[in-house]
Length: 233
Image 1 (cartoon, rainbow, N blue to C red):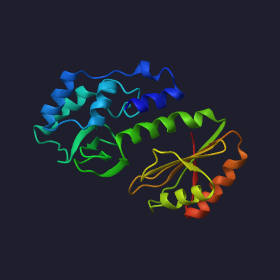
Image 2: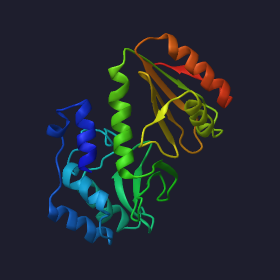
Image 3: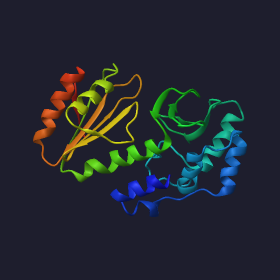
């Protein structure tokens, strides 16, 4: 997990001053109320960011704070109002669109979002990938002068076609790309593509000049047979 701190600090050296970890007692309490030992990545996350992750995962609509996770187990789960899949541990709670986030307890520890106590959709291939790709999406496009975001409402799976076309165009895959996210770079051009299960495609491109962006988006749209619409930022 410290590799994530090092990675994010390359973009924002002050990031580490804005995170706050949980205590060993709090982590033992979470193990007790969940009935499971913490996966190593989850334990490392909580030790560094259990009371403040600088908004890299949490926001006003989702909490990864260990106190909120413990309360959810003690209140909602204990009373039978909510449930957590047997092979998972609760990672995030109290969201509006994403009500809960689950972390699989066995390696590689995939991350799922949920609104009904089930693993409704994949969010990341692992916790470390989730953190690093969120850092990349937050910071990397800001380093380039021009960026644009496009979406499609069609839920037809298109990410694999976009990924394949990006690779044909010479984009190098960032290591934290996974089954629902492709992040790639080529000569100062950044491409970020997300497609959650049963949802449309989200494409963000960034470059130091605007000209390559238009040609890139047209080629992606043609290769994946998707109708991309500009998303106001």
